[in-house]
Image (cartoon, rainbow, N blue to C red):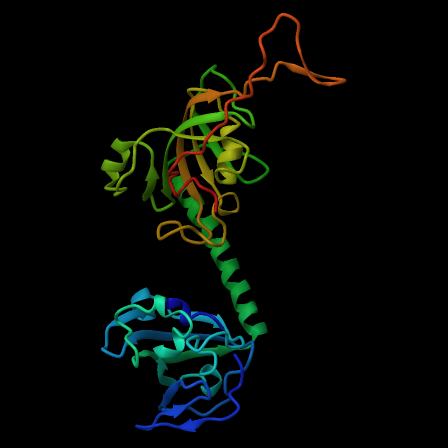
Amino acid sequence: MKKFLFLALLTVPFLVKAQDGFMRTPKGVQYKIVNPNTGNRIKLDDVITFQATQKTDKDSVLFSSYTLGHPIKIQVKPSENIGDMMDIFPLMTAKDSAYVKVPTDSIFVGHEEARPPFFPKGSYLIFTLKIEKVQSLTEAIAERNADMEKMRGAEVANADKYITAHSLTLNSTPSGLKYVITQPTIGRKVVANDTLLVNYAGRTTEDKVFDTSVEAIAKAAGLNQPGRTYEPIKFVVGQSQVIKGWDEGLQLMTEGSKATFVIPSTLGYGEQGAGNDIKPFSTLVFDVEVVKVIHPKPVATKLGAKGPVKKPGTAPAKKPATTTPPAKKPAATVKK
C-alpha cells in the first residue's frame, strides 16, 4: 500500500461538497484541509517536504513517516492513480494539514484479487498529511547540491579521523583507494578474470562491523546474520561482481595475502548508500584475505580454416569451468 503515497499532479477542475465538512474531488477522494494557511498553493513540479501517515478506517497504521524518522520529499507530478495524493497536494499550501479518505473500491477496481482482508468493500484508505516545506525545482536542486557537498566533506573528515585513530600507514591509488598489505606472500598474483575465494570483515569509519564471512568476528561484534554460512565468498574479480574498491584492491594482492582497504564512497556505494549501516557518502574499511586464486584454464585449440583444429597428439580441449556466483553474497560486497 505504500506505493500509493509516492507516485506523483494535475489541478483539479472542480470540487464537490461531501458530508462532515469534507470536500470531494471528481475522482471521489474525500478531503478536509485542517487549519489552512495563507500563501501560494503547491504547483506542478514543486518539490514538497511533508509528513504522512496511512491507516485503515479501523485506525490500524500501515505507514508513518514519523516512525520512519524523517519526512518524505518528492516532486509533484501529474496523478497516476487515485491513491497517490497528487490531486490533493495542489489544494494545499506550506504548513497546511489535511485529512484524506480514499475509497478502496476505486483503488482495487479491475484487480480485486489484490485486495487485502483489512480493506473490505466500502472501506477507505486514510491519509493524514502535513506540508512542512514547498520549494521550486531550482531551489530544491540547489539545496540538494549544497547538502551533498557537506556530506562529501564530512566523509573525508571521518575517513581521516579513522586512519589517524588506528595509526594506519596506507598507500594510495589514483582512484582514491587507500590500502596496506598486512600479510604479504609470494603466492599467485591476482589478475582480472581470476576466480577468488576471499574472507573479509567490513566496518564503517565508526568502527561498526556491518558484514563478515568469519564467524568469530561476527560473534565478537554481536552481528546477527540469520542463515549465513560462514566461509570465504567466491566471485570473479574484475567483472563488477563486487564494489569497485574490491575489484581494484584485490588485484594488488597475491594468494594467501591479507590487506586492509579504506574505500571511499566513489568506489563503494556512492551517494545512495546500502541498507541501514552504510549511509550515503560512506567510506568503508575492509580487512580481506585472499584464500585462493583460480586462474582461468586456457583453451588448447587454434582457429583453422574450417573452425577449431585440435593440436596433434592432444586430447580434445575442454571449455573453462563456468564460475557460478555465490547463492547468497553478503550485502556489503555486492555492487548495487
